[in-house]
Image 1 (tube, rainbow, N blue to C red):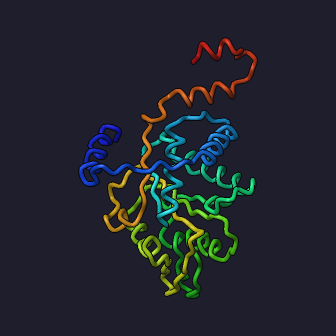
Image 2 (image 1 turned 30 degrees about the horizontal axis):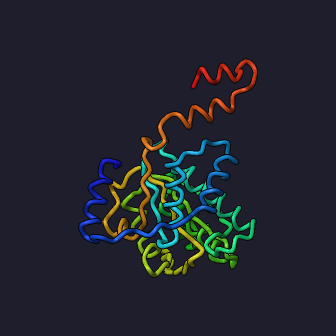
Image 3 (image 1 turned 180 degrees about the vertical axis):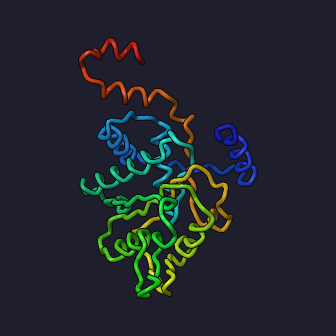
Length: 246
């Protein structure tokens, strides 16, 4: 993707000649993101910090966000670090109302059936049972705190289950269930999709979401090796031995 950036910026400059994008200072957030990485015993990587800030910016304007990229791109670390940073800023009583405590529930939508995801009727008793996804969202709706609540779909996007999310991701922010119930969501909630690609996602779904793309090329191998070395026991791995590994 990096080789497309010069072309993208050239197109933007042609569309908006002579206009400079104002600089936004995220100094407090950036410092807290770096602190959150340190708390997780991870390495501070400038590109990952930038992607985490981009995820925050996207959350501020979109109800649904997709973290796209292959394995080892840092997708999970990205949103977990942002959640830690936002929660710490609220604990520190930061005056910016955009910084709130953050909680999230993560599951793999492809690991369960459609009925287990959204809910289904029992064929014998005709009783309705909530699915995992609808139960998580309903629980978040019932919470009246200003905390951010993220529902994280960690798995490949499937054209079947993702289409049922279209009413959630548009301006209605309403989950429509098979029993006719409509669950109205609120702006403290967000839908986060952690996916490898968008090969089978429809334009209707993609256009409703904000996108943050992460690539392993941004991180490289060094942060992983440094974190691994830092967790090695002191014996027999002395500091000199760890330097030789690096």
